[in-house]
Length: 350
Image (cartoon, rainbow, N blue to C red; front, side, top):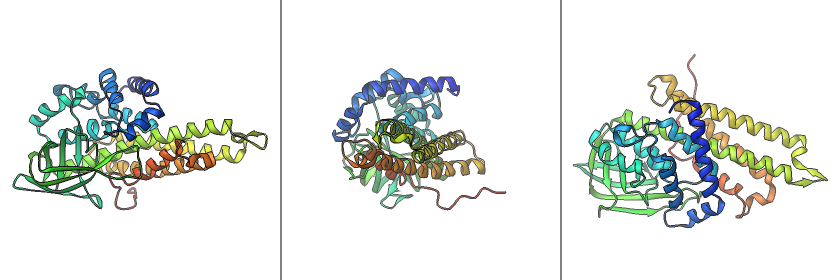
């Protein structure tokens, strides 16, 4: 599904489902619920739109629409801050299985992921972040603790990143302990998963496959940040049209017009960089790696700036629990840390 018209129609369909079933009350219920996401909303997205099957090839029971189509859904979810197992399972989990090169595992796991009946969680980071795996492998057994795992508390199958490659393990294994982690961003639930010499199945995958998985994570977070930031901009414009000060809507003051224009430029430039990065995901050239790293940095700074401006222009109401602005502000700061970032400042070769 590379046609722009089809991608736009997909985005409109997902947005319509979210508008009908993913309102603020649904989000607040999901945040306080056992799973951390709206199970009914995820079921609707899987059954009516087929979102979990988008990035899965047809030979494994998927739609075969490609990663770009799946990331269109991630962008739309970013607008609402809903965090079903799309990013953690249908994008990163699926990508990890495919990058491992294990056709047997793909044929066994991915058809159920495509149906929405199985979710995957990628276990990766140590306590300091994603530079080093938190889990080590020895003699087919896994030991250690993976931190900051998306969908870790509710996933059916874990895909574990180690220095020796990727491993698969069922969450029902008695040697696996899962604990929900306290987070600044209440809309995205993370977990800490500990392995006590847990027997696991090796999937394969070398250092390049793991690097490509990280680049996929950066591209996915970048498009999510674009969706969330665009909603912040829309929310700010609407508020400044209705908030009256000194006898006129504050949106009519030139200083605020300039600030919102700057927000718009930031969002649109970030969108261009994010989709350039998506196009570069399967490109092995040095410039592709640079595009991915640049998108990660720019989209992170953009969302942080736009969310901060949203808080400022909403005034005191923005810091209340009842208003959504504080949720986007927290997501912006949490996303800045998610999956790490390029280690050095970027410089494009002459």
